[in-house]
Amino acid sequence: MSGAASSSEVHPLPLGDGEPVFSAPWEATAFAIAVSVAGTGAFTWSDWVRTFSAEIAAEAHNGAAYYVLWLQALERMLLAHGLLSAEEIERRQRQIEDNPPPHAHAGQRIPIAIA
Image (cartoon, rainbow, N blue to C red; front, side):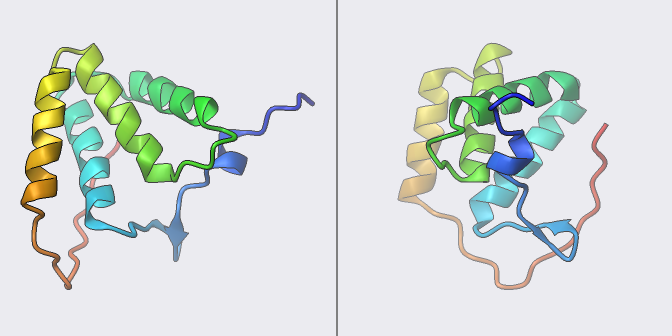
């Protein structure tokens, strides 16, 4: 066995009752955007898995939170596939920081399909 930890040992997917849990609205949004964009065919889910896995491997000993890595991988994919420029990502980030969406106290469960 190699000395490298598996991605599930380093950054397990946060689960509650066997379902993904989000500690903040932005995490759910980042998750949904990645699934939605992959669903358009802009990139394959296999490409996503490779990119996300690379983010996890690069941060293995830095303790970055799961969805921070998810967001970093999403930004990398959006840039790599020419869907957004770095400037557009930064502009949108500033816009959200300056005008945060209201917090919804009632969540909705909407099924999604991956693959």
